[in-house]
Image 1: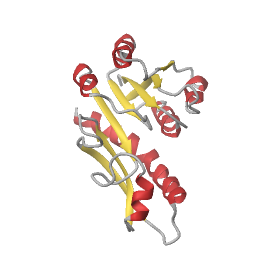
Image 2: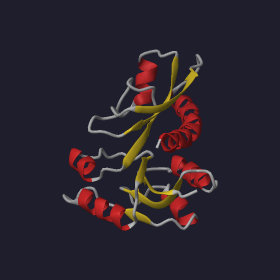
Image 3: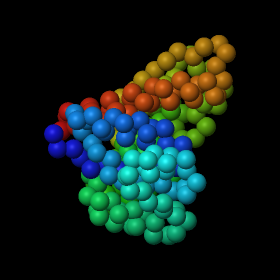
Image 4: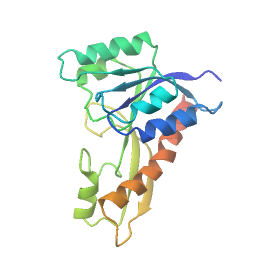
Length: 187
């Protein structure tokens, strides 16, 4: 099987990165993670790139042309697939127009509900009975791309933001790889 060269964008702990690295070791998994891009030099997730000898680049997003730098790096590494895994920057319309490859994101709610940040507090505030995570294609609208897959769970009476986060992350670890497999089965 010829695997696609993939890049994972992170900003924080990198638990989805760790999971995708483990899945990518499977012969039948359609991507190989060749690069990690991070906008936070203190991100704990960088340790997974280091432990697995995956090149990583820390991008200063306060520089005006940082997206051009990212595009050039992606071309250098021949990246044809991007996973946003807790990446806390919004990719601009210009970036998306200049990088016409597949970009997907994982979001900790059942989209179209609760786009953007603070999803767990919104779930509690609105007294949701059910929540989960969504993997979707990235387009110019925040968390607005076509949905690839969703995973759900029912909330318990004692759930709080932290317990919802932990339950959601557990689902993300199966949803993200399933979405990637689904994309490449369609192509």
